[in-house]
Amino acid sequence: MSWPILTLSIVLVVTSLVLALTVLLHKGRGGGMSDLFGGGMSTSLGGTSMAERNLDRLTIIVGLIWFATVLGLLALYRFTS
Picture 1 (cartoon, rainbow, N blue to C red):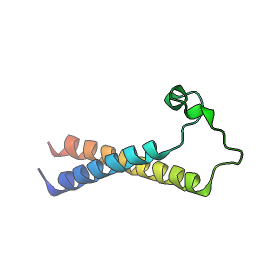
Picture 2 (cartoon, helix red, strand yellow):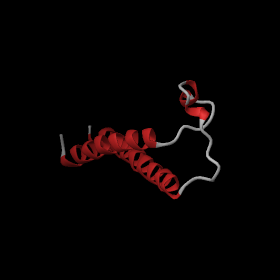
Picture 3 (cartoon, rainbow, N blue to C red):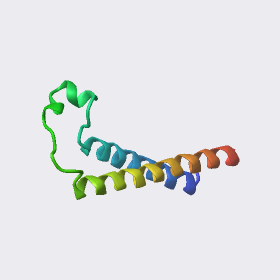
């Protein structure tokens, strides 16, 4: 295994874990599994908080890094074999 593949594989594992954690930290929003277990009982009177917006941005950024890493690994495996 070459060092670029190993490096991208490590980045993929780390971003996968961070992406899973950031998705799980989001508040439940209507009609999903969170409503099934009572998550829909509470309503927020205000808009989204600053922390929620930052979490949204972080999730999008980590998701894009994860996607780019998958494409990079695909290219490396395809052209190095």
